[in-house]
Image 1: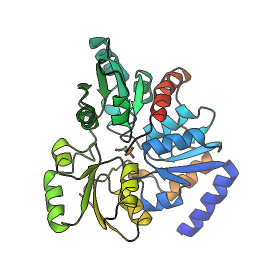
Image 2: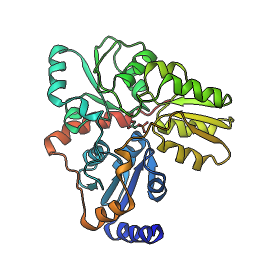
Image 3: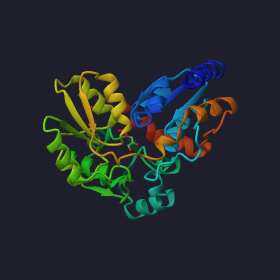
Image 4: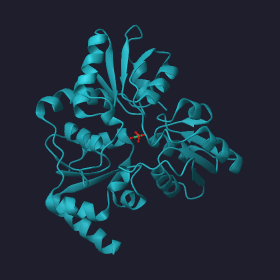
Length: 305
Ligand code: 13P
């Protein structure tokens, strides 16, 4: 069944001159089928670079929007139009304009998990991989507004010593991971190196060994001589970690850390997407041009870790 669908998808991607991009949180079979998998920063770079005419984005809406902004001449498809990101929707452009009005001299950094309208209102965009380096690159005397994820914002503030103005947004999937999860997991796997995504809560991050984006987790595990790792993030990353490091063990810090939106993409939906060219993600030109400036600045700042 899957073999047949795989063949069909291959034929359709050839016919459409399409590339399939998948985020590290996608179901394992979707990651295996994709031409490129990665974290938000890696996928943005890939979307900007590819020669394909069509990008099928296996991820959530803000990722497809980012691809459409970076490659306005390409057709960007999101196979499930309801695959959103509740974190991205936690601040509207109007709320951000009000915040800017209250802090007129501040620079605005938005996490890539945000709407195109919010990116258009921001000076800089960042991902979890380069948030620290990006904030560090800004003039220390400047006030900085950071939206919408308060946990990533606090992490960037701690690492850089900058006093950021934070928005109270959060990722519902990461905040379900608790201190008990980490403590229990350490008891069961005392040899594990524990990695956490910066979207986790502060008490959880205080208990772990490394705080890393999904792409950084993959790089870290590949270089480390350790043989057992736990990941406090969405469980999809475990598939890639295992695939890339067959001789090591990988454990999710919590089985409850499942993003329902990331799991909406299926083979059937990819087929329908390529057959019917659905669901095209378009960003109005006026917003796209402004948002692109903040994204271009993000791509310039590569993570040092
Ligand atoms: P990464 O950039 O680490 O892949 O994170 C993406 C994301 O959406 C986390 O919730």
